[in-house]
Length: 236
Ligand code: UDP
Image 1 (cartoon, rainbow, N blue to C red):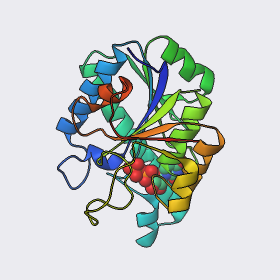
Image 2: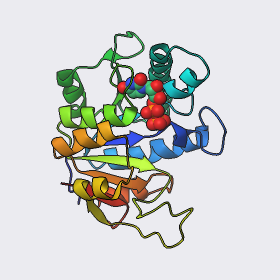
Image 3: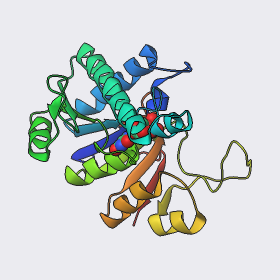
Image 4: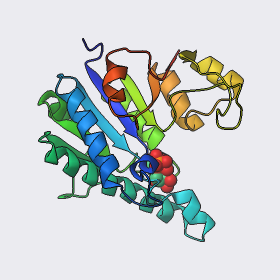
């Protein structure tokens, strides 16, 4: 039934807030864990990258007077917090999971390296790859594309609050229409922002297809993988 063997799922930190203004909504977390359990049970290999925007963003820290590099490091630590929260929620669902960190933080997580992450995936564990790229001035979208390419994932699934990519912001422009598929070239031509440019270019250069979809509707993750017409597929 499933078309993909290995996927990289990107979750934004902001979605983890659910109805809250800050931090982690345990209901949203439990919903994500259930959806991930459902797809992991099909035998598909699942790697996950989570953002940290629900806790801290380097740029907003810099605007408040923090040193940018320290602010970004705080943001990367926020992704580790979210990753631990998701790993705990997955364990509550009896899903085998291993947390990797971009920089050495043992025993909080295992230092990320491709062979170890692939080994975990081959053992049927969900691999949560936290800490962004480990470098400031990057985003978790870039980290997510990087890990997807490194781990040779068949596709990156970008779970968001909107159900795909539109010609314009559908909340502002009622005539906006959704793309079922779109090429990277078209994304640039139209000036659409699905991710920051670093992430988009890395994905395009490495021929990584990305599906942008609404992860906040329960059951959607499974539908995307079952090739139902959900979200927007971005490709070369
Ligand atoms: N970050 C970073 N390097 C990385 C990934 C993330 O410095 O490789 C920092 C950056 O400050 C960013 C924060 O971590 O603002 C949280 O990540 P992001 O904003 O991508 O999270 P999301 O928007 O997905 O919640």
